[in-house]
Structure formats: structure tokens, C-alpha cells
Length: 126
Image (cartoon, rainbow, N blue to C red; front, side, top):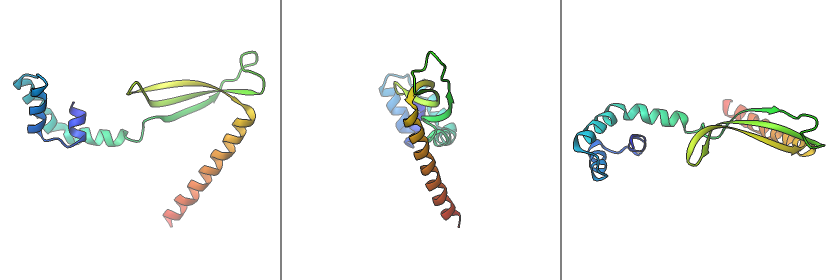
């Protein structure tokens, strides 16, 4: 509740009224309002800092092993930070079998995308 109140710049008085309407006793609502008043800027800053960190790829590792990985395939382990699972961010690991030709094509396309982004970034610096 505090995160959403801070995210949407809800005033303490409106926040207090709303949570009382949900059944929170007046004393508890007042305490929550004091916390909101004291920490809303810090909560907003934390939300901003984490805003672009959802589904962030942390690592990719080739874990192919003879006998377990199908022929002409590569098995990759993808570690994702703050992936949304059932609406909540969790650190996850995914195992992916990908055809080697497709993996090479994907890598080539990703390198082209990276080069295009670097050229754009260099133009911005000039």
C-alpha cells in the first residue's frame, strides 16, 4: 500500500481515509500516514531505481552435455533477475535448447543490434 501511495503521489490525508475505509483502525492508519510522509521520497526513488531492472538478463551459460543435449543443439542456462512471476519479481533460471544454426543467427543479429546502438550512442556524445 505504501509503495502504491508513494508511486502515485497520494497525499497522507487521502491515503489515511482510503486505508480506514478498507478497515484499518484509525491509529494504525495514522501510523501508516506518518511512515508515508517520512519515507515517500525514498520509496519513490527506490521504485525509479528498480523500474528498469525487471526481467534483467544476468548471465547466459552454455551447459550442453553429450548424451543429454540433442544433436545439433546447444543447451543454454539463462539467469534472469527480477522476472515477473505471478505478478511478483523473482530471480529465475531457465534452461533453453536451441538449434546451433539458430543460435549463430541470433548471435549475429544481436551483434548487429549492439553495433547500431553503439553508433547511436556515439552520435549522442558528439
